[in-house]
Length: 504
Image (cartoon, rainbow, N blue to C red; front, side, top):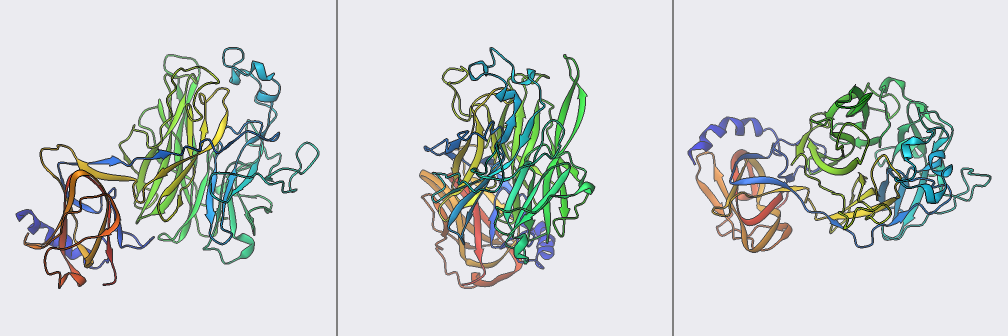
C-alpha cells in the first residue's frame, strides 16, 4: 500500500472537485469505469466491450413505401418523447434513385448489373417520420405535408431539390427535441447537409422552417450529421465529416479517406469551422460516421467503421465500434477493431438470402429506459456500394454496460484502484455482471494505505446495487477531504460503474 503516498498530491488537487476528474455535464455521482480519469491503478484487469443483444423482432421496418426507393443507410434518429408518450423516428431515404428505378427489379443483382455502374443523376433525399407506442411496431403516418409524385399522402417532413453533389435533398439529417430551448418555435432542431451544411427549426418536429445555411462550418457532411446540446459545455456540438484523397494502392484513381469532424455553436445557427477529431489508423478501416451523446460524465461515440478488403469499393462492410471522450474533442477507442454492434453472419453468402444486417450497420443515438438501453440502428443485408435492402433494427444493452473491467488471468482477482474520491461512501453502489461463483469486493483506504472499511462480497449481477459494509461505516458518510480511495477486487466478474450518493 506504500504506493498510495505519492497520491497525496493528486488528492489535494482533486479536493476542489466533488467528482473524480469529471466535468459538470451530468450528475457527478456516477462514474463509468471506461473513463480513464476514474482509475489510478489496474492489476490483472482489462477493459472490454459490453455485450449487446439484437432484438428478436428485427428488422423493425424496411422499404415498404413508394417514396422509399432506397433506404440506403437509414440514418435514423430515434427518441422516446416523455411528453407525448411516444417513440419517434426521423430517417433519411432516397425518394428518387435512378440507379434503382431505371433498372428492372429482377436485374437489381450484383451478378447482372453493378449498382455503381448506373448513372448517379436523378437522386433525391428526404426526411421521413415514423412513430411507435412500444418502439417495436412502427407506423408511417400520412402527414399531408410534402408532395411526392402528385400527392401528399406520405410521411415525408422535409424534401427538396437542394443540390449536394451527386444527389439532392436534406442529407444525413440529425433531428432532436431540444429541452434546453426556450423558444417553442425552435423546440425541434435539424442538422444536415443541403446545398451546404444547414439547420432548420420546428415547433412539432413535422413542420420545418426553411433551411439556414451554415457556410463557416465548411464540412463535407455526406454522412449522418449529429448535433446535440452539451450541458457541461454549455453549447451545441455538431459531428460531421471531412475527407481527403490518396492514390489507390494497387489500383487506378484515388481513394477517399473519411474523417470525423467536430463543430460547435452557442445558438445552433453560427457554427465554428469543422475540425478533424478522429479518423481510422488504416485506410482500409475508415471512420464513416459517429453518433455522439453524453452519459455518466463522459461522451460516448458509436463509431461506424467501414471495412475495405482492398483499395476498391468491392465487398465493403460497415460495423459499429465504441469510443469515448471527456470533452468531444479528444477521443479514445475501446478495443479498436472489435465491433460493438457487429454484422450478422450468413450461413451461405448468397445475394437476397443474407440476414438483415449482414452488410452494414449505422447507429442512432440511444434511448435510455429504466431497465435497459435501446440502440436502434440502420441495417443492410448486403455490401455497402451495392444493391441492398435497408431496415431499422434494434439492439439492447444493460444499463451503463458500454464497457467494463474484468480479469485477464483467472489465477488471481482483478484489482482496480480508483483515484481519490469524495462524498457519502456509506451509500456506495456498483453496476457489475457476476458469474456463478464470482464476486466483487470493495475496500476503502486512506493515503497511507490503511484500510478503513471492507464490503460484503457481491455475488450476483447487479445494477446500481448498494454496497453492504462489514464494518461500522460511521465516518464514511462525508468523506470530503479527497484522501480516500476505493479498491475493487473482481473474481469472475465485470465492473462497469459505481455511484457515490450526495445524500445519506
